Amino acid sequence: MIHPGIYIHIPFCNNKKCDYCDFYSIACNPSHSNFQQIKHAYINTLASEIIHYSSELKNYLVDTIYIGGGTPSLLQSSDYSALLTVLHDHYAIASEVEITLECNPDDYSKNYIQQLSHIGFNRFILGVQTLDARAHNYIGRKSRLCTIEEIQEFCTIPDIIPCVDIIVGIPVQSVTGYRSMLNSIIQCNPKHISAYMLTYETNTPLRLRTKNPLQYANFQRNMFQKTINALEASGYNHYEISNFSIPDYESKHNLKYWNFESYIGFGSGAHSFYNNKRYYNATIDDYMNDAIASRTEDIRTQQDSVVEYCMNKLRLKQGFMINDMHNKTGYLPAKSFYQSVHRLIDKSFLIMKNCNGDICIQCTDEGMFMLDTILLELASSLL
Ligand code: SF4
Image (cartoon, helix red, strand yellow):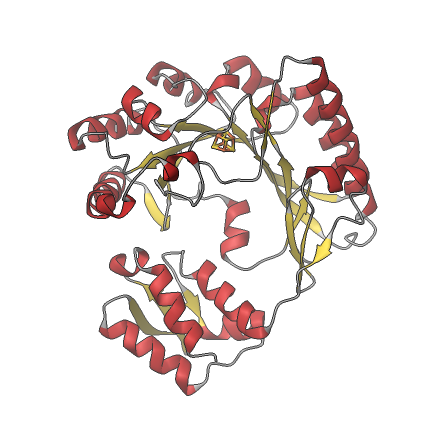
């Protein structure tokens, strides 16, 4: 039986978008009555979309549900109770299902997390990003700063897996200031830390006001290496480029993306991958107009699939096996693929080794910073 994950996208953010963000979301005023109407209409559309696809997916046993955004914590626990009821009524859900919610500091309270925990959520990601006011201003984060006391409280709430997101390599932050922030977060004992390198995405306000982001590349890399060292020394397993967990607390849901496994996305802008097909939903207006018609199949060539497979699997420390790549993409590597792999091994970006009769290909630590270069080289071997 296939065990897919379900992803639900909540496309709303609080008042203004953060200056570094290029995720799909729209800024709303949550205290305005209009927002309540839009929110209810969106939840109803989500419910009918979820029900519509249930017959097509009736042989699947869902073992992860992930609510992402946008800012999912703008919705109340009663909203999620309604959505989880729809899911339980129409899908086979594993008894040990992992149910994750991303929570913005503006919406965080122990009470909110406990309400969600009571209705079945068991994994929460607190979007801390930074505890430093200058760094917070530099990236133009619109939510308020989280406090270390809140992280301490969050990490002691019973029956949940507390996870924290941080941003690494914000130029105005000193090395000592950053290390002290990271140490204080580690001391709170979150089970999982996602450490994302600050990126200057095209056309974001942050990119537009930054003359030459490349000038920070060495600093950022240095900060990332310090992050890896500090987290590994504290017992976190660096299992994916940006993700660190205490053993057994990896994100089961996100591992489905990186392992090229099935997931079903609901909501505006959500993506799906199942039965070897990819789909994406339209942005909010078209989605609200007709959610079912707004889903489009994303037709890929085998070359696209192989590059996407490598892009996801090489993010993982364990890399990939040639037999698994063959099973999931239908591609049996040609001589040119291995020639590219050897060129990347010569540059110390990849490692290749025998594993029980199969061939395993992994990134080195250096290679993890050079993933774009690696993918270009591998893609060129497929032409
Ligand atoms: S809250 Fe998250 S999704 Fe919304 S604008 Fe900020 S970074 Fe983007």
